[in-house]
Length: 212
Image 1 (cartoon, rainbow, N blue to C red):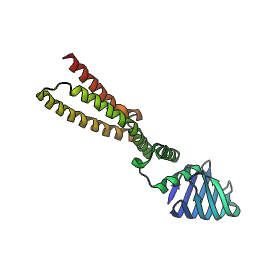
Image 2 (image 1 turned 135 degrees about the vertical axis):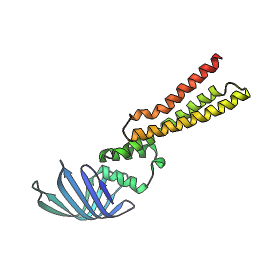
Image 3 (image 1 turned 90 degrees about the vertical axis):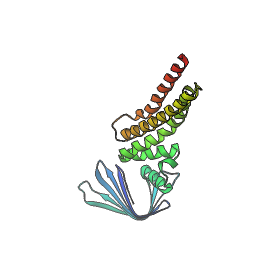
Image 4 (image 1 turned 135 degrees about the horizontal axis):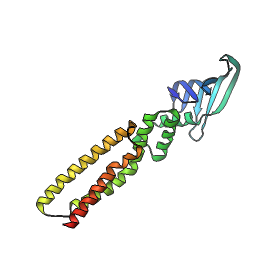
């Protein structure tokens, strides 16, 4: 598996329950390779932002690109918060729908620092949906109260048709908005646009029915 970051790159032959085998870690500084670490094992622990490397060699890279000092070690801790965080998330193997808000924001941090803009925006949309959904329920309650005021049978039939049309328009607007946000065509805040439109429609229907 590969995990690429702006400062570091890590490669492991095997990854199982947070433990990596036959590990190579590249540490960069100002886009120049600074250190290469090769180890038999590496472990990143959930409650820490450190990764521990075991039974390996730390090679210092000189400014001219040549190998410098080589240091043998039995155990060496390194502060690698971004890599440690992603390894925890990979170990959990959760998709966006299964993550809680805290886990979602953790993964957002990983995407942001890794420069993965598309997945960052996609997860942002998914997290924001958890806030827009309760509002959507209130909006549809408003629409329902406005549409259902008149109890005449013919109007009741027309109200059912109007309700279906509004639901289809809402879902269509939401789908298109999400695609445009992920593609960076429109602002992230436009995710609230379907709710705003439906709220306006609901208020208009209520005012119109009350004026009859």
